[in-house]
Image 1 (cartoon, rainbow, N blue to C red):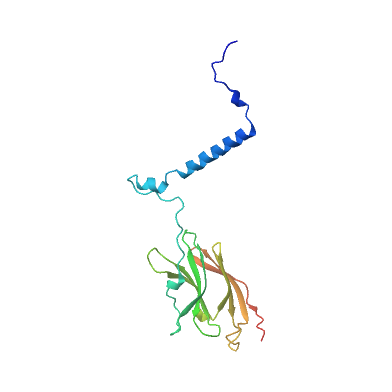
Image 2 (cartoon, rainbow, N blue to C red; image 1 turned 90 degrees about the horizontal axis):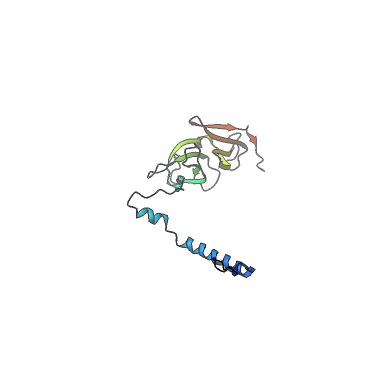
Length: 196
């Protein structure tokens, strides 16, 4: 009988416990290898060259309307940012903020202004568009910014005899940035049941 030059392969008759132990050992090796990977930022900082930019850079923050100066004449009571919503309205990759602002009146329904704010790095937010002037005597109900479209329900009055607490007209409007300006679309004014 001739002997084989190959090692004895008697261990090839493996049992399920052998495979389970092998799989567990391999999983442990892979997990440990993941723990000991060099930190990408550490290797970039020790290379002597400029740091590598992150693949997913932090998105720019939307302007904070509390830091903006709004053109409302409110006397000593100041202004209130009643509603706000961020969104990239012009598609430049930087978010704007749309703010609904009115005087901080103690009662009644003060008229609102709707403003679009932008902000350059290191500067205060500034108004780039006024969508609703407070002089128009509207307050704002529903309000949202989605997919570059601003939508709002404007509440107004059918006559000067309607109490300021209870607007009796509503108009659903949208604005969208088109050809360098905000284009307004609206549905006709509808009466509102005020309950009085």
